[in-house]
Image (cartoon, rainbow, N blue to C red; front, top):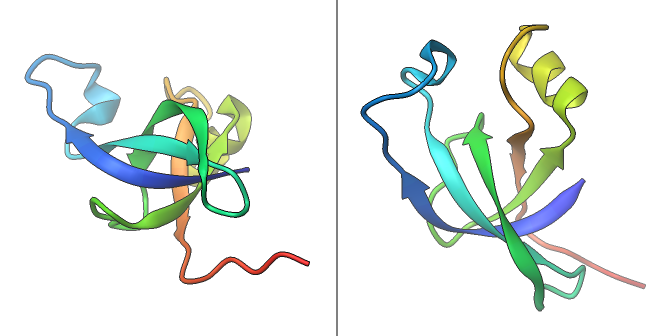
Length: 89
């Protein structure tokens, strides 16, 4: 799983039917201390996250397909949680 910050949304007029009525988010990857890790992901939103929120992302196709309950879905990354606080020891 990946910790990230939502920095934007993607809108498309032509896409695979699976993506109809689904929100796509641009996620900047973060380290556990919430500093930038470099890189970004485009992920389907399953928790109604918004720009500026820290989120938990699954970046593995089979796990993402299980979340959407569709074994043939063309998906790799999905937001599965909004993070309120990160504590490291």
